[in-house]
Length: 441
Image 1 (spheres, rainbow, N blue to C red):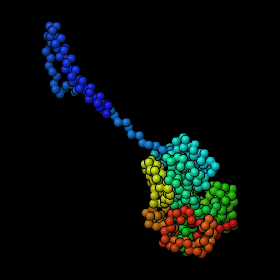
Image 2 (image 1 turned 135 degrees about the vertical axis):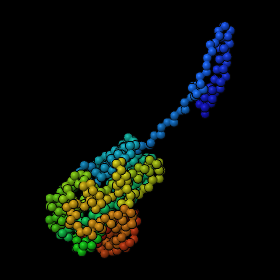
Image 3 (image 1 turned 90 degrees about the vertical axis):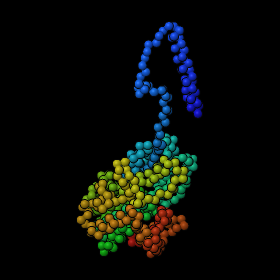
């Protein structure tokens, strides 16, 4: 207001003083005997406009930025899980010029909080632990940093706070499609899974694959056995190799997949000349591991779809963000280069959908399976169909006892066909293998 008053006062002063000065000059000139030379006034169109003060420019609007910090439980290089999270962080930063991505590798539960606080002190606005066992400690500091979003992957715990977000993709949808392909490719009728350890997360994903194998086998009139053997942790390359070798040599497995993180099971498949089904990433196209002569199909997880959801809420200043994110093939993200990625999808050597089926494997797969893969994928993208809604859940009698939730006895129908299970149930209580698998000691 003072500035406006000052400008108005200045103009009033000019209107009074300038005419008086001009009059004084004329009088002084006349009294000295000087006769002013006649002059012509310039045409009105060329007269200089009255001086005006320039308007103050509004300061340019600055887009608020953010820093996404991911704590990786393992190393990044040579893994599928942490490498997928790292790729997601890079893709987010590539799309959003105002967003930075920082990270720490090999973070255990004892380092989760110290590293998080260090990164927050350096400007982190969103901090994520990419595994539940080391991500859960972030809830302990969530109240101390109310303006920061914290996130943790879900294994079975669903604890949340206002700014402590839990997330997981519906990987089982892509795993179901992989199972259809695996069922078509096995000639011995034996499929093996090298797995980490029993947990709701692992069991749920395996069950998606199992349903795909069973549907594919039924369509083709085949008898297929599925063998699961646990390693004891996520990243144990030597042990993973030993179990993969055992599945091939003792159980005559000719299609191998994994729920672990090293490349050892793939190495065994390549050495033994059998088909491999990949996990978490397009291992041929992204890592350059093996080739489509061994890798029949993989599923690719785009964590960036979930991270973008968190980021957009943070940038919008949302004080009460969505605290459980369980997104599937119906959700997507557009990358900086314009490519649209579903949260999860089947992928191989840079190709997506049925095109991702290995060129060497495709001639071995009946058309009805290829058509089923294409149809079910499209239905899941549109939200019209889901394997966990479509099928009944019959317990195999194996799995993981949870507190207050024992493994259902073998043969128990836990969920009828056509009933949609809640996200909470799938994420926290799906603790049993589906009927029809053999869990090896």
